[in-house]
Amino acid sequence: MRLNGKISLITGAGSGIGRATAECFAREGATVVAVDVNGDAVQATQTAITTTGGNCLGLVVDVSVEEQVKRAIATTVERFGRLDILHNNAGISVLKPIIETTEADLDKLLGVNFKGVFFGCKHGIVQMLTQGGGIIINTASELGIVGQPLYSAYCATKGGVLALTRALATEWSAQNIRVNAICPGPIDTPMIHAEFNVGPDSVAEEKAVVATIPVGRLGKPEDIARVALFLATSDAEFIHGAAIVADGGKTII
Image (cartoon, rainbow, N blue to C red):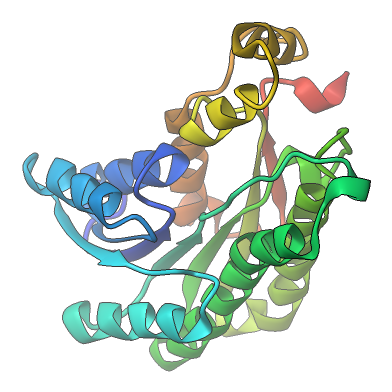
């Protein structure tokens, strides 16, 4: 129960990394506010946690809309009194060469991947200042560090998350607000399988990706949830502004 009594809010909690992290935090004693744009998915996360004895409130939120993010944090505080841990995790991908990437594609990516994180940090920090501190974890990507064909716009948004994380760490560390980022590699989530399906042979696409990972498999959402758990505990209290890569060794070769 490493998070016993803590109040956490996790975006993108309807599936993948977000859901795994929500379940992990709940098992460790945290109250979880699970946020997702998909109402059915976030309800499934809430049910999975509460039926096993955890405490979870599901909220339907579009993180690209600032007022909805602000309201989600306000609701968390109204219901539970504070916000100890904020995990800005919601993200989407678009696979296109830059010459085919439309302004609408870019706006959608920026809205979820960057503005969603920015709004979460902005309003999370406002609350954390009133309570004497807190922890923010931003989901970036290995593709915020290295490039990959067809992901130029996605890479740009995730690089922005890393730059934002570093800036906020320097700005707020003295106020006991700890901001860090996780950079997952290829993780076995609905998003990556949608990416595999872009090509003509999804099985071949998956095999090609796995071949780039030294450990020989896709990551599991639980692999990233455990990194988030570490960052959410006092074990990581001297870590500020870090970009922790969890990619099975993919970026070291």
